[in-house]
Length: 217
DNA sequence: ATCCTGTGAA
DNA sequence: TTCACCGGAT
Image 1 (cartoon, protein in one colour):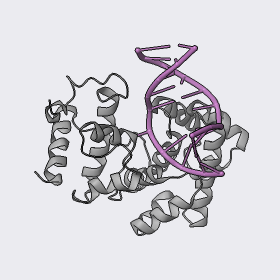
Image 2 (cartoon, chains in turn orange, yellow, cyan):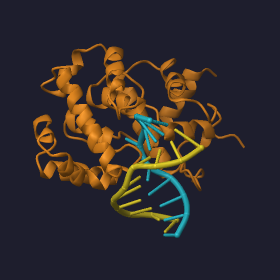
Image 3 (cartoon, chains in turn brown, red, yellow):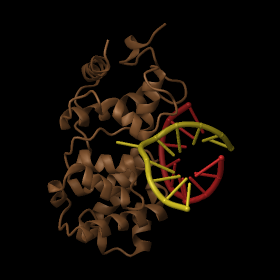
């Protein structure tokens, strides 16, 4: 069986059981981008608290976010952890938008995808996963987002090796799947759900996992 | 390889 | 009290 068939069978199994995820949980492209930075190495509920604090202070627009002092910004995003680093990263991202004369983040949609990806990666605090999350979920670019969850699930199914790097893992999907924004959006969301609910780091619940039927022995 | 940090579950 | 959390920089 070829890789495309395998990956689409996995997608179907997840989709049948879990259904539409309607990601990313955010009301605007800008909020989604901010969320992508705040959620780095943190659970979503903590990131959500930081986003709620920003919203309560009209901080979910470019203009609103800019007006906070560094200290105020740190205070508001504190629940997301790494608050000093993340405050600086948010400001780096705002500077990036200004440098590229974007009044609004959606102005970037016209930029060619991989040119934009390279530019995002130049921002201190935006790595491959954050860049790709912004591209896919805020700007509707057909880029497959991979993460530690993706590596864990597909390594446990012995489809990739444990030390596979970000780029290689991304190509594992993008080389064979059609570059469809809706497919990429939903597939990553389903992977995250699966890792949180069943394919947990410790004591995974393989019996109830939607992917159980693909496991050997 | 190590640091950055808060929060909730186990 | 430990562990895990939709990483990234040094």
